[in-house]
Amino acid sequence: QNRFSMESAAAIYGLEYQARALAAQYVEGDQISFLVGTQTLRHQSQNQIHLLNYNDNTRKIEHRIFAHPRGEIWQLVASPRASDLVISCYNDVQNTAKAEIYTSVLRLPPASQSGVASISEVFDSSGVGSPVEELIRFDKPGLCGIAWHPMDANRAVAVDAKTIYIFDLQAADKRAVVFSQLAPIKSSERGFHAMRLSPHHGGNVVGTCSDSVVRLYDLRNQTEAALIRKAHEQCTCSLDFNPNDSNYFVTSGDDCKLKFWDMRALSRALAVDATARPAAAGPLAQQLTAHSHWVWSVRYNPVYDQLLLSSGSDSTVVVSNMESLSVPLHTGDDQAGKDPLPDGVVATFDEHEDSVYAAEWSVAAPWVFASVSYDGRVVINHVPNATKFKILT
Figure (cartoon, rainbow, N blue to C red):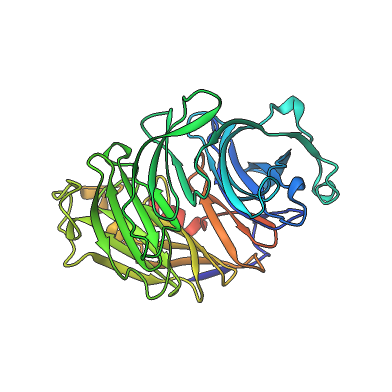
């Protein structure tokens, strides 16, 4: 295992306020871009969205800053179809007696309307440009997870504590209204606190976390397709689906572990591909202790599914390898005698000094990733070259 500190070639960017929301932006071409949202409750109207454009050759960051006066940002989800659209889940205490989470589709201002500042100018807000434009307001407060539908540009899938919703984004009056819903959680049960939409099955399978329980739902027939009652010892914090193999998904939890699950051993309801490789003996296909404290986030690499990116409250970001549960890149005689990259932690990055709530892979460069810690530090880093060359050769 390699450990990388601030002496590595990471690019570091500082925010004026605390933060936990991070998203990889979808941009045409090879531009590496991330969106970061601030989370200050004391200065609600001064929250911001930062667009970070990263140059992989110079390791430099150019940024644009947009005002987000609606409140502290808890989640950002970039549109996979339009680079100027993003869903924001934010805490609004201006219009109600209590704090409540609201969700909107926002449009980022074009480049000509945005301020551009140096790193030092960010801290006095002199580089803040035009505010984001609210295009659509979701008519359900309290959403704790949301995703753009992968097959339908006019739909979004979201959850609150007890209900899964499919929203229609084409409704009148700039409102996203409920197209259909599923309320599977009983009032006596712990509610949802995280969700992830599978890229397979036509975008009809959603995974949810509630306490230590993981559930998979099939939205086509509105049924629970799989249930893991104790995925982790305490709380299951995050989950993600393998982008290349519909059989596997990963979870992270308060027990410091990443756990890899085989859907074929959970349920037949999803009609997963049972011919790709033999199914695991049980639903838990593999597990890995990647952190020394709670693991807030885990993400599969969008191209090389053997690579996992995780972050936690131990202030570290970890790149792990799980080649044994990945789709082979090469087959045939060219792999004869090749030593596989062993499963386990590849590298630990410790540029952060606070809990790292989110880490995301770039959608333009599969070897680049970003992370954000609660103290407002954003770090953009790379998979170690030795690992990259081992995978490619």
